[in-house]
Image 1 (cartoon, rainbow, N blue to C red):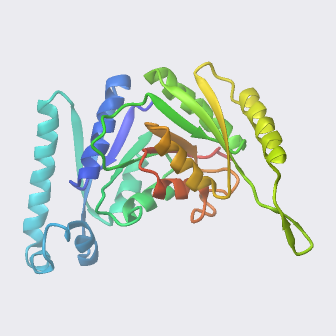
Image 2 (image 1 turned 90 degrees about the vertical axis):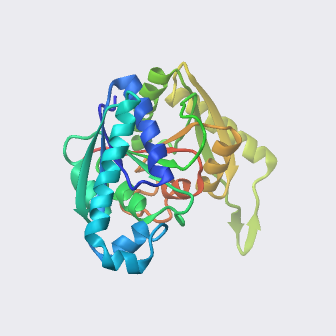
Image 3 (image 1 turned 180 degrees about the vertical axis):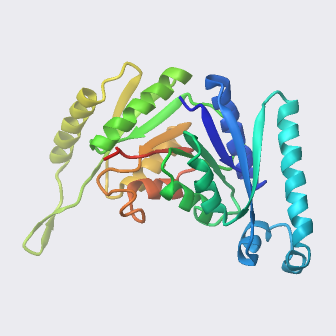
Length: 290
């Protein structure tokens, strides 16, 4: 399914964890794994990437030494994994990290696996931009000590065409890894307004709505390994993230287009919020081609 995988690699714990996911895919599909390390060419980018381990004075004074250290470190990572039986390839580039990753991703790759470390605030600039602008699927992995597995997959849907197309990929993943899929819809319930008075949904109204949605899920997403769930709430992104945590899911699969349009209105979209909130890895699939 994913035969050619690109892993942006900045030596952080998150990027090492991303490489573990790439190795899992390699076991299943004999994938080719390529690491890309981008040595930032502006001082600002250097500070963003290396400030956790180096002081600014050292950055300004020893750029060439830093470049050589990064190349040597990347070579050692490749050797370490190859000694353990995992063949990986490596690319060393200089430039703006997210731009170089996106440029390389156009060279026949079908998946980017990008790690995010605990030290990163929010979602992280490079993962955010790569995930938003990439034309191929992105698996976003938060730093974790959990074993890499795909026993339980959560598939949130809004019934859009993009969601239905993405479900085909989710089924392929489930078949490959023997996974269970839970297909989830979040019914965002807002009180009706009569004049200036809010009229809340009654319990009966909610139950009728949930039963109707459940029937539609079972009809439109019929799959032997699937089960179905309907939640009510006022924020789908938060509800999905919390449901994934409570249910101990191993992966969330989401399309980039749906009700909100991921590329047109990335900020505030359900997918973007799940990426920020969830500790569960998120596979972001691209929308239908025009």
